[in-house]
Image (cartoon, rainbow, N blue to C red; front, side):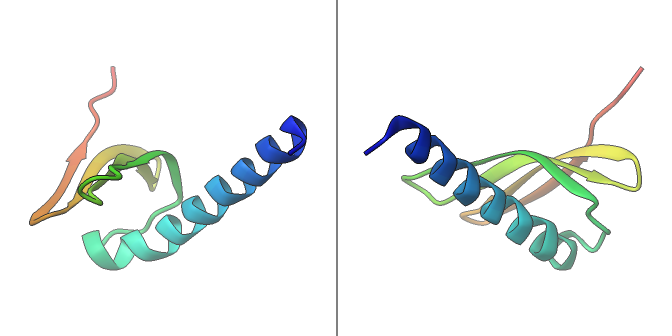
Length: 76
């Protein structure tokens, strides 16, 4: 496979997951989600973690395996 095409496909998959998170996380955490700037999905456990932006504030989140955590990121 052409390396450029492979990178483009990965970028499209990444953007699709990001959009699903933007749409789905508000129902989980009961806050509006403007953007998801970082996310990881553990392939072994399926636990998701990352950083989301809500109304100009950044939060880290973790979700899965009985964990549901949202924490405001302190900014100075």
